Amino acid sequence: MSDELTVNRLTIAQQAVAILDLVQGPIGEPAAQTMTRYRALTAHRDAVMEAYGAERGWTRSKAQFLPSTLAKGAMHNGGRRVDAASREMPWNLMDHVYYWKQGRRPAAIVAHPYGCNTGEKRAEAQAWAARHGLRLTFPTDFPSWRFPGWTTLVEITRADMAPTAA
Image (cartoon, rainbow, N blue to C red; front, side, top):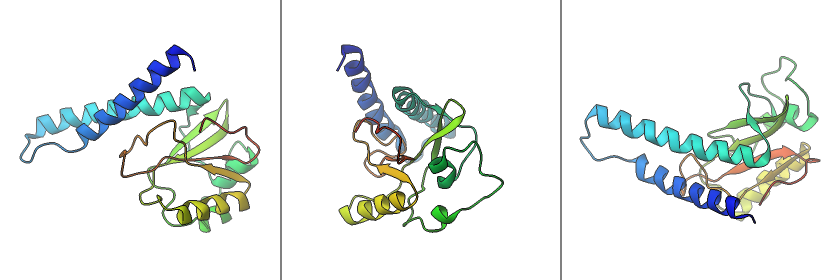
């Protein structure tokens, strides 16, 4: 691992700690301080999120797309709002969702669900993904940028895509 990447990872870990520090302010905090804290929290989350995508060669998608659109590598959903994969999705997998693209095509769906710490839930989610031509992983090289410690980072890509960092 290069020195630059090591420094980048350290910075990312520091960002995650900063997110946790900013999540809850003191009771009775004045509204102006709450807004300042919220802006700082958003800036920290955005920095971690952008570093995550950049390391994988992805950019944030302005549009949402369905799991089947991702699996096919298609440009759009064809006007559909739901698909079989969405209807069969286990538990609350798609919480705090971010859509990523590589070039103009969907590259990944990244979610931050609560309570997927058990092997059983993880296996269920991975089986769902495999049934729909997707790969579902739980990256450990980045923290969840939503609520580290409470949410788990989940990455969904096409099954035929090269795996990203673990």
